[in-house]
Length: 336
Image (cartoon, rainbow, N blue to C red; front, side, top):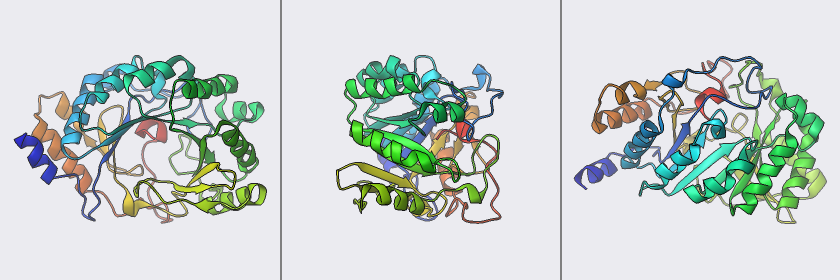
């Protein structure tokens, strides 16, 4: 109890007073899709020996909980390609401090895992879905598998997940015509859809500022077709999305990470699949906690590395600065 009390007084607070209570956990850099904005067709993945074990991930999470972390999100790559990932969910669900466990997936394997994930203790699901038109989906993902993804969404709903969000990337010149169909699909399923501005963390490094389809433009397009969007209050001030609702009750989220950065409320710490801590999605430096884990370090040493990582966090991620340095890793390597 004394250790927990001491840790609670020394939470993960950066130089700007932001308290970090959320941990993003990448469990693999592998994926069963090859989305053109994310991952090259040919890519060299990490050797299995360099990926954190579930025991190591559980330990890092347990220590982070002592420093105030209360929510985790499991990401990839595609987390469901990691064998027995439901076992990790069950391990984390046994940590008494955790209030929420979420997972982001492309949905391709979700039909096979939805029930097991729910039974293991998963609370929330984010499902990436950039188009509901098969020909467009196949062009972007380089895989003709949209029916399986839609089956996964239905399976998640049938499994009893009552908090499912659809995530759609927004790229100028490519995704404008997908906005309406995605809203109509979300409405038909009574799900929330979030549109995410294209960020400079694509695997092929083709991002340019002109390719960002902004949240403001997406909002105008939605309102022109579906009616006025009413902004809802944020249940969590640190959430990345601005929440809206259409007159028919359809929930819309806009994540304007480039045009309207929300860094002032960021509460996230990141753990990559290979055991590197990062204090920002756009960070160009990392802290090697895997080395500590595999060299016999005690929990106090893990805590100190987490504090060092958070203390080094910048005020903002810099996407609004033309001189910013791009991250050295892509989204699938960092963990979304």
